[in-house]
Amino acid sequence: MKKLLIIVLIFTSSLIKSQEKIFEKEVLKISKKIEQITKEQKDSLRLKVLHIDKLLKNKELSSEEATNLKNKAAEYHARKIEELVSKEEIELQKLVQEKVDGKLALSLKEPLTNSDEDNVFTFGSKLINFTITEGDLEERNRKRELRWESRKKNQRTTTTQFIFAMGVNNVLNENNLSSLNNSEYQFWRSRFYELGFSWKTRFTKAPSNLYFKYGFSFLWNNLRLDDNRIHEKNNGTTEIVGFDSPLSESRLRHVQLNFPVHLEWDFSKHKVYKDGSVKDKTNESMRFGIGGFVGFKLGTRQYLEFRDANNIETEQLQYDNFNMNIFNYGLSSYIGYKATSFYVKYDLNPLFKNTETRNISMGIRFDFN
Image 1 (tube, rainbow, N blue to C red):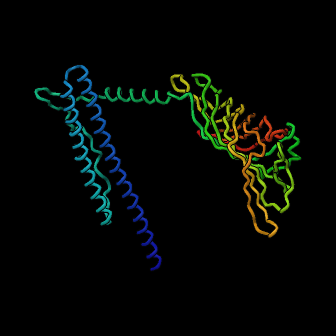
Image 2: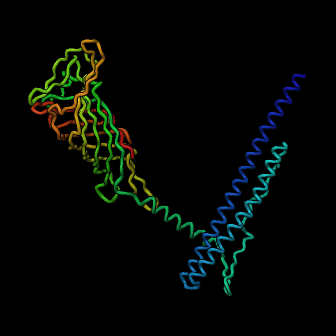
Image 3: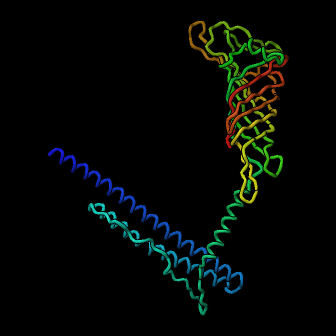
């Protein structure tokens, strides 16, 4: 008895699943028919409007006659869509009812066509016959394909990118790279962030791999001192001195607005069409850029966090330029794949006045088209 019950349950489950599949399949068929009906009627209306425009251009119809004929054609096809879709809605209602009753039709009627469509309209004493031939459809499709190809090939010589970069920030003394080993700043905790926009323009009208890249960006440079020290102004210089209380934070941040300019080689593979025309692609392969920047500082401040003599957690925010040079300029370069690249930036002018300390940044850069 148990085995029989199990067999009945399995059979019933299979039957329900089968009915679900049939129901979904038939609903999909009806939706496709409705879509086909709408497309056929709209295409037919479009061709009639083209025919009317042709008669108008040849002065076989007046402007008023052409407008009235277009309105008549639009009303006719709207009625046809409503009439044909209503039949499919009835079939859909029947299908739903059969699903509720546990019965499903094995098949539905074949898709409706507009072969019975009336292609003759009268206007006064004039008889307008719309004859849509296969040649007309082929010509329309050919023109549509040409327009599409033209749009694909119509490319801009300049594109826009959103720039985001982040990484580590530090200083070099006397332009000596080895001075990083003796830097007063914490290497991994001194970071920079950059946000901006760039424009990328080809040097030639024809597709190429060489671009002129320019734009603007906002840069946040952070320098964190170690060994419980802070920056302190002393007349015309800025010195690094010890602090009386134990510091949990000693950070100097300067914000600047930069205007970078680069030459970029983008090795993305070009798109070649059947007729031999070429469209260049960007940010889809290896990229290499080299150039520089000019800019100026928007503000500088020092953040200090420590416990004072009364063991009270204290935060200080000091607004000052700390004898930093207002204007800055330098070199920058990047190399990467698609939108992501490794980025290096080096200031050629000293960070502080009367010093040979220069800012250097290294990190990851993203150029999003």
